Image (cartoon, rainbow, N blue to C red):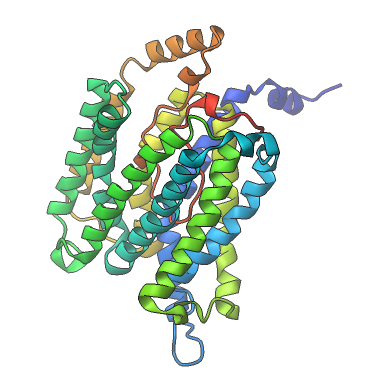
Length: 368
């Protein structure tokens, strides 16, 4: 006979399991910036020969990008069939390559540069410009309908972030400098990559998209850094201290983070994912406070209150929306069940993690 504990586990619905994975993935992604910065600080305290820091943002991005390809291959290998590849034309490969450059090379490179020249809190707050701009870009280029309530929520959250930035101590990265400019540029690059990804995913299986984007993006990043700064930037890539600590980032962020998000995409409901990802900016700031002892400034409470207000505004009528989505699913209209959160609601993960939170479901024909 089954015990009460066994029965309780069996009684858990797949949607609840997916919701748990969504919250786990969001918390991991929210901590990724702080973890990366903490590892760089550890490397600076353990220099290699010549006094160099082997755990640089450049090396972290390159190695973690390579590691991220492994779980993608395991999850999406069934998509790489001859029939799927023959279905792609030159335009598809062009969109894939452009998306790889933007999302797996330029965007994470800009955010790593921002972290190197600013604080995690500043980077997270500056990236709040992305949700409203993405909604506008989606309406302009993808002809998607913009819900006034969702757009208002994005503006309120942006106001909360700007309030926190404006009242920060100038001695704690309060001045709008090179790091903040790079973070804003990274957000714009992320929007552009998301638009191209949406176009590419209309006809490209997600497995081909994710693996190709990560692989080609990593190669482009390596060639770009080598051309601009010289190949010596990667001379410590196999140093023991880097190989020791990269697994902390790889296991927590790359492997567990990706697997959690993929499971959330498979089982979680759209409104549960939207709620979880809405707390990402606040979670990222809290992780920066706990792991890096960063001070968000005196406007943390009023600014955080505005972000919470934005979450409430964005969640209005969520029950009605959920019912409509369930009706859509019963009619076989799978696209209506895609997660409704904006890409920037997830903390800017500084590896090409395949967080397809706006992927149209019918674009994925494989299994994961």
